[in-house]
Image (tube, rainbow, N blue to C red; front, side, top):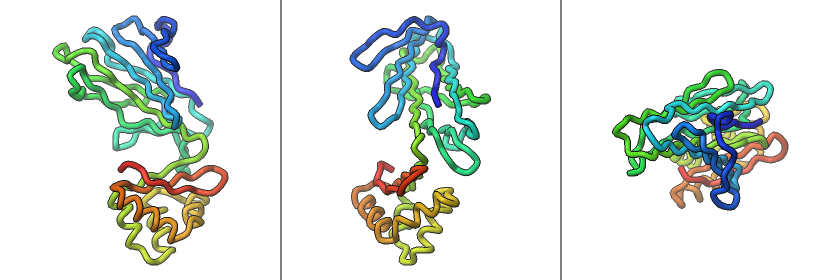
Length: 219
């Protein structure tokens, strides 16, 4: 699986900005700066320097067999299959002008191409930075529970009821749901309690092979 950059055919060769970071001048009033994070997240910063630049930025994605690119109601996008497996999560888009003000933006999907539309105007304070964040999940899938859902987990005293709740809320089925149950009631409850004390939420990472792991993450 891979993701392409917008206007790659018309862009200049990469310029090294600092160790591990390069930029591509798209020769149309925009510059693309992809950055790979340690956690596997790919941040693709697009710097829009003027109102004459394009408002649409296409990211062609090579999708694994059996998976498809889909938009979510939250504004985010995923690459996944009908059984709930995920190979990538693309966070909801954002864009800000040079004053730190948000610029309206959204995703559109056409086949295997994700397009970020940035609705700047001539009065926008340039440059504008737009930044899709792509998290690769080639190892399995992840389910993040909200604070209300994390609180609900702590209240359960019956193992079967709690794991049914986690599976239903998390959209888990089959082997993925079995992985949750194998963690054990007290382990999950303790994780949820510790997360709430820290003002955080629980997240379940489910590998395609091996045991699931429970983490506390920012809500």
